[in-house]
Image (tube, rainbow, N blue to C red; front, side, top):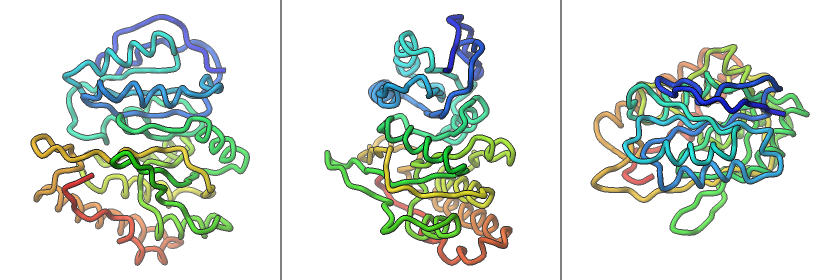
Amino acid sequence: MYVVCKAVINCSSGDRIMIEGKGGAPLVSVIIPAYNAADSIGQAIMSVLDTARCNEIEILVVDDCSTDSTADEVLGIRNAHPNVFLFNMPENSGGPSAPRNLGIGKARGEYVTFLDDDDWINADNMLSMTDYALAHQMDFLKGYLYVIHNGKQTPQNRLPYVPKDSADALKCMVSLQSTTQDFLVRRKVLMDNNLRYDRDLKIGEDTVFVLSILTRCQEIGYIDKFFLFYNKTPVDLFDPSSTQRCGDREVNDQITAWERSEKILSSEQRQIHFKILLIRLMPAPTTSD
């Protein structure tokens, strides 16, 4: 069981808000980057806690210098759930990559996954998939997800069959799935290979990160199960998010992400056959998310 003491410390510059006591590491760490998410962060966190096995999860919320009451919302939940932690970025980073990276460094779970501050998950399904990954010694496990748009739930990334082995799973993921955050990765893979999101990219950073992981995993799996609900947010024309903008910076980031992804794949001999499939992973520039 994951045990923490009640002492509260200063949370500036990304320090942990609670001092951990003795106890085993959690099964899974859920990292949530947050910015001005007071209206949605509560639902995101509570979806992760909505399981009888919530003591096997740690939730790491990384606040990117929000100007609203996001931090207060998180602290209010933490009062009843000591496995919820809050970290503050020292300054606004302008995107989710740096907060996710801070979360990776603070995580203690056997497996790690990521959740955006306006999305939510099915926690029991996530834990079931984590159990499967652990039992089969998977370094990386992916399923499918549900996209929420205009009140409608639509499955996405669901493969037509369950791949027979790691090579087959890798081929299917590269050719048939997007690089959304609906995956579980063994934390040891991230730490041993110093894998982090590219902070200089606002578009395409997910693709570069996921490909970096896949080319360093020995056991890769797909299971016909989901845990992520991805909320397709309408575009605010007056204040678009970092992933909803489409200008010179975003186009250049797409090109840079392509080049880096190609280099990742070409540097791994066992990935050579998947280079021609890379285009399927790259989202086209769009004004809606």
